[in-house]
Structures are given as structure tokens and as C-alpha cells.
Image 1 (cartoon, rainbow, N blue to C red):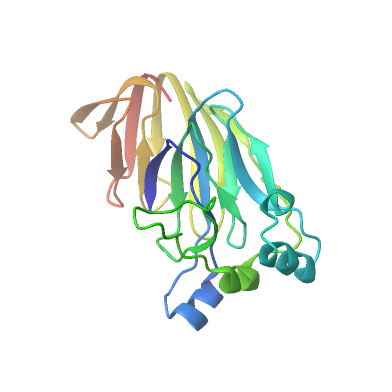
Image 2 (cartoon, one colour):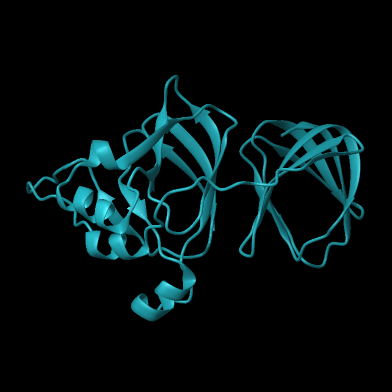
Length: 228
């Protein structure tokens, strides 16, 4: 699944299970690993990524005592940052951040904290602390990503992440390039600029805000323009 999320307020703090837990406990085929490319971030914008607990007992104590400021790890982000969120990672998008999210096709979400907000009937949103305690990775460690860069003609390609679920690349096009399909299919989001894509004898204009899929049957395509 690919989404654009525009956070006008602090989003709830969540954690997702891995595939094994999803199948065993939720009777669902997939857990949820995801990643975020920051399309826009206000000055000093922050998100939650991980926690400060060093042990299972420490995590449970901080959750049970609602010591969120002590538990939650916050980091500042800026436009153009990339954040990898493997299953088991406590996380939340902060106010003033727009992200392009790539994720496993799963909606299993365990809510850890929602800032004690209430609905119109003065009810707080349900939390799922017992499940969160079981699936959270302890201690938190930022993933070490092998982000290789290469130039292919007039296209600068940076591999942001590659795992068993999805691969995400950042492209910077300044000119023209011919490419062969190396994956089963590709979903492409244009985040800046204008360009054209040529497939066989067909040509399509693309611009910021466009999203399209190159399906399995396409063997080769050409890009021209200035776009990201």
C-alpha cells in the first residue's frame, strides 16, 4: 500500500506486529513494516521513532505508569528525509509533516498513546497496551540501511530501502534516460517537476502529484524532463 499522509496534528502513537504474530493472534496474513519519505516538514517538526526502554520490564513499567515523555523517543525531521519503520517499532507522525508512505498491505494497528484526547462524548480512544507490549522490539535500534547511489544516464538513483516486502528508490531526473524493468511492477509517485514517460510508441506527460503503475508486461521505458 502507498499513501500520502498530511498530519495537521500529532497522530496517535502506534506499533505493528510481524507476520508471525499477525497470523497466530489476529488470523491475518501480514504484519506491517512501513517507511516514510518526508515530502514536507515544518521547521522543528518531530516524529516518534522508537523508545528508551532497555528491557521488557522497563517497557511495561513505563507503559503501565503512562510515563510517555520518558518512554517515547522523538526525532526532528526535514523535507527529503527517509524513515524506515520495521514491524515492532513504536512510531507516530508529528504535526506539520506530510509523508509518502510505503507499507505492507495490512491495517493491524496497536495504539500505544493518543495524547489523552477525547471525542465529542468525552471518551478516550481505545489503547492496545497488552498487544503492544508483546510486539514491540526491545531495545530500539535504528535500522542500518545500505543506501547505494548510482547515475544511470541523466537519472540519479538512490536505493532507500530494499527488503522482502518492498523496495523504495528515489529518482532525480535531469534529462533523458532509457530503463529496463527489473521488478515485477513499479508504482511511481512524482513529487516535484515535470517530465514525460515513453512506453513503446505511447508518450504520457507526468507532473508533481501524479502516481502511476508500470505493470509486469512492460520491458523497457524512457523518461525525459526534470523531475523527482
